[in-house]
Image: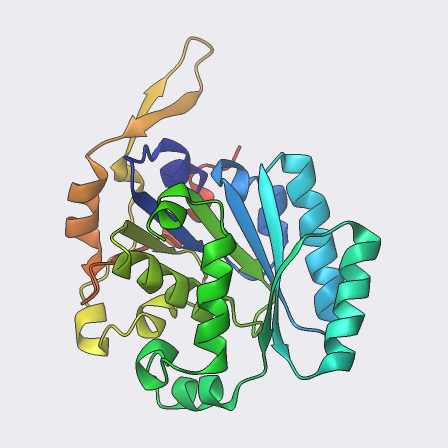
Length: 143
Length: 112
């Protein structure tokens, strides 16, 4: 990973999106060292949040310029409150709160991307909002 | 701009990676999506058919240009070929124009 990502020179309006391995041991190997933005996806449960917190701490050590927490499968105000509190306590930037969305589950089961299965879903709407918040200048200029 | 998406298994990171990749491509970005999960699912999440995914090949070490430095250890100095060539040789391009690469094998290459 360090290999290709470290050697990749991007032109303007080029973007690289890496779906990284789930476990955090790889983080300490320096895999994401060459990333500009790290998105840490977490569910609103204690264990998931703890993992997110550990990843964030490692990312900080590695000097990743920007990192954001994306909460996913959030079921209600209580979930949201708990994860907001967690992020505030740890100084983590919560950039998006994505809902628990049946449409995503159904799309997954039928192996159809949610963007095709239900482009008007709450999930897709909120991912579009997330995209606007990412520090990608050309995207912002386009709007 | 390189965006890495991490999280516990089942957190939905692959769905997010795929959705973001396609939305960026729709906005005119040239998007390279790299599946670095040992259980690669990004292709399906991007809407690539199983049949088309069969063309996806793990990246070999030979895509990296290496040389031995003065102290005798090997260092990576660049890509052996332009990324476009690598993408067409080992990757799959989706209907949205997202170039997908599978990078699982390379995971150990840059170690040390």
